[in-house]
Length: 88
Image 1 (cartoon, rainbow, N blue to C red):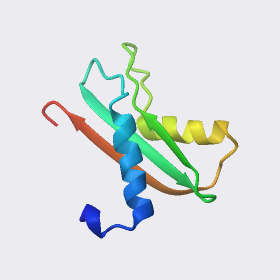
Image 2: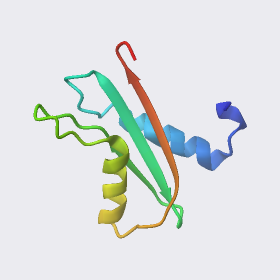
Image 3: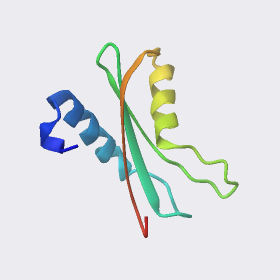
């Protein structure tokens, strides 16, 4: 899908995921992931992946959903996920 062909709301969601991707903590894989979700009410929540040495890592979309739920937002309307990494 061409980014410019998307509606402004979807482009904003992708941009929000890209913005938070740089905050990812991925010392083991160097694979950074950012996610953004838009709720039914139009709010956007972001999350990035977090790796631990115990392999009990958190995925970016799970963090974003956790952020939404912690604010009382339960109805997810759209999700954007973006990633970059060495050799992927």
